[in-house]
Image (cartoon, rainbow, N blue to C red; front, side, top):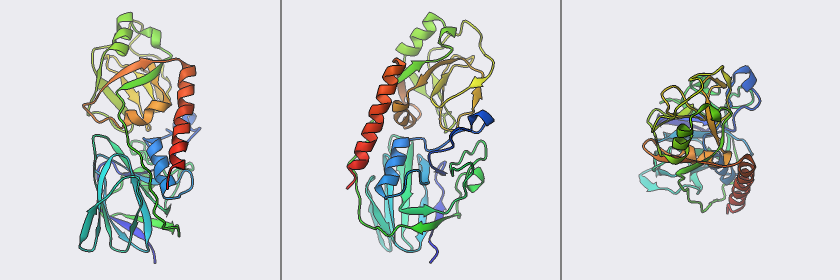
Amino acid sequence: MNSFFEIIREGINTTFQDFGRNNLNHIGIPTSGAMDSRNYRLANSIVGNVYGSPVVEFAYQGPLLKYKGEKIKIVVTGDVSFKIKKKDNEFKCNCYETYILENNDEIDIVSTNKSVYGYLAISGIIDLSLQWNSCSINTKANIGSNDGKKLAKNQKIKIQKINDNLRPQKLNYLNTRIEKIRVIKGTNFNFFSENGKKIFFEKEFNITKHSDRMGMRLEGENIENIFEENIRSEGLVKGTVQVPSDGNPIIMLSDHGTIGGYPKIAAVITADFDKLVQLPPGSKIKFQSIELKDAETLFKLYEMETQTLISQIK
């Protein structure tokens, strides 16, 4: 029996994601990949998938899916409200806990809760074409599976293989918010006035609604550039904080362009990136400066914490 999910409601910004594409920025190909790496990794680990398997990522409201096929194990990670409908019964479900779907069951991913991104993983392999060894969809560049487009109503998510292990699995994990984002100083840090630097590290910034997988736009007191408003375009990395001529920072996220011509005041450390992207518009954040060696130590701790969580899956 060919197994698949039929999309009854597509949700908001629903895409396929994995770890993304490495080592292609020099030819203008963004890395992309799951926005919240930890929740992505936990989703695959809970259902027993191999490292780097594709998942369904959604923002704010997720999809409503009708399943057709043999029994399959699924999990949802993040801070998400969702429910499963079996025949005439409908019940609320818990994140980080597996459920078994049978033929004609429905899963309704209602919304994220005071967060942005969530993940749906199935125990098996989604039938997807890869581009540069990744399924990750970048809708701005039309790169990835599904012709680089968001998932749409009436579309089918085909399952190539279902894992035989249907044993229940669960992880006790609570997502926490972060309001102080740790950064290292950027390559153009001295392009800004002393007052501009003080504003960057001492004042709050508001996350605007003009944020997506490409970048997070902030509003606050203007950060003064005393050198040049724009510079010759240079390479960018995920987490780079650029300051355009209006003085309001923009943080580069997973689908960011590979070069940019705005001065770079800082870069968000990898250990804080997952929690940063989960902050919805209207949230307030502050930046804290740390040294590179401390950022490296925090990344090692982040990796250790992630591996510890994976080991606690029961």
